[in-house]
Image (cartoon, rainbow, N blue to C red; front, side, top):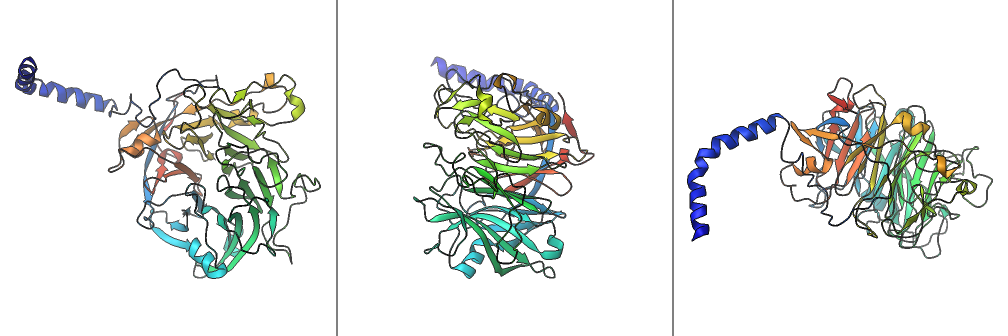
Length: 499
């Protein structure tokens, strides 16, 4: 009876307090409170003591970043399109999903550019490999710098392995291969119609894979040379994959992709391992686990975001011939195995003799001691250098679940001490931005995405970044197929650093 009387009284008095409640809500919204400001619902619940191997703190609320909806990629086979890359060409964006490439106009209009899977089947009879929905299918696209003259563009993908691999150009292979390869493909575009010529398919090279995880990744041009990121070919690193091995796994490659006589492409004469028989001549840098995203700065600096195992996410500045340590190192630590804190150890005092290059910035995983995979991984973006409020920084994110938007100052990344005496190593500060979307403020990209109708219960975000031809920054989610533009990355936009 007591409980019933309490409820009855509450119902009777509620109208008296309703005006006050409305006033409080209006005032709080006026100050930017939207119910998400002080509760980051995008993070998985973690109980108990939290551990983080990186002691340097992340500086939070260091920038206000405004964003807006830009485009929506059509559903594929009744499911949300899983976006893997965003690449510019003149004033258009090209978006790759697992099986297709779409063209997006400056107004956000979307048209199919190439059904990659169908095109491969027409020419070869094979298909894209999508046994692994996370790592399979189309990974990236890159347009030749002379595209307006030659019409060439390149696609990195996982493709079914030929039944008879003889006659194909395998630059590295494994004895225990799966039925799929990492491949680099060239197509030519009819410059009059703007349509790809399906039969111009040309397979430049193949890389044999031991598992369906961590295959070929993003590709990007700097001047006339094509850089190709490739994962270490491991399943969550339960058994450490490549990186130090004499193949293309866990490496960044560099070639001139244009055919030269009977050669499918050429290797630059200053590639660092051209005369070193331990590695294929195509190799440019070694020691990566899963170099998720590569992007160039205006001055040619190559940034690579490398996804860690259980402890560290890395932002690396990639230099010719450098060794970034995996699987012997994870961030600025010795990699000893899986497990948060338990899977890393301090660098030895004489570590300089190993000649490893360490990250210019790093983010530690946070969770219970000895935890394995807790849904934290890096999605690399690009440096923004266009005079906008976001200019002068490199952007990255915790991509799977939270969608925390990170950034570091470009000068700090460049001056970070990444080689030599471990006691003198330094990293750039990692900052975290606030997100302003539809007039509301959020702590993370995940929280902003979950504010969209129909996505409030979506656990994952799966962030991907892309930079437009004017230096502006976009991001997408595999979970809703939408592309967003950071309007703060446009000159004259609102927002900017608050640190």
